[in-house]
Length: 334
Image 1 (cartoon, one colour):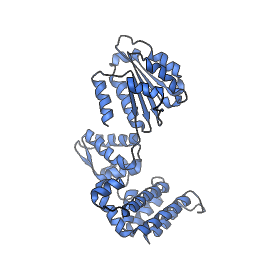
Image 2 (tube, rainbow, N blue to C red):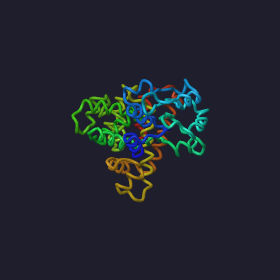
Image 3 (cartoon, rainbow, N blue to C red):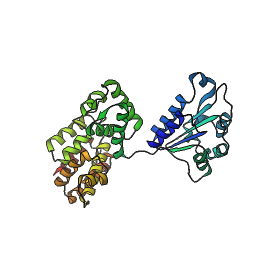
Image 4 (cartoon, rainbow, N blue to C red):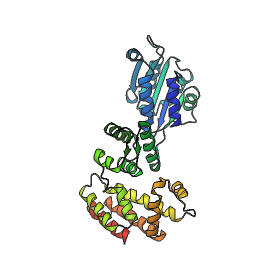
């Protein structure tokens, strides 16, 4: 986040670079920086002749260089943005020759999503020296809730840990999707609101009572009735609650529980750090650890692997997902 702020601040102060090479697995920040450049370097009346957007699948490196070497018309700068530049991965290193001697009046933006270039080669080294080489790394699952909180803080909102967790569970780590949903909430809710699980349920359509987060909690607390109610709901709504996702999240939970059992220091701060979870959820793991000794946790992980295979049609004779989940729940909680 600090690096992105620095890039934006430099652009605001007219300290632009001749090349911005934006790469990495997380497309969200690549789009954010590219969009900021597209909307803020040139005045509206300058964009007609001096701003162009190219797409990697439609151009060659030679085309990009030819456009980058043009002079601006009635403006100090021209902006050339190449989107989906990863389609040029086989020839991208050819851009090194231009990077060694870039047109000073051109701002060239390369959006190279879902992969990176070799930082040991000439292109990366040259761009890092004379321009901006930015790598957008994908966040780990346990980092996304904190990211949601920080984004909402910028928008003037707060969010309860459970509500943030529901968003991550439902939308995964796709930051663009999450940001779109947060924008919707920012329009609907009063500025300064604390976003709750009820807001998520009402405005985004995620059930606050019947979701993987609540299933995990019910299983951890050995609340059999509640766990049965949730899997019954899942069985009736399989598209919204795919079995593969449920098994994956439960496997992560019990794997973390196994790690918890192995910790010497079971203090709240150390547990949160070692399990990579929000401190808010540490009590949940402490309760689950009392209900599931280490040996039982290892057995549960084995049962989850069996259920995963069955969900993929291995040795299950195409059992309905609801039946696989019911059988799994019985094996976990007995």
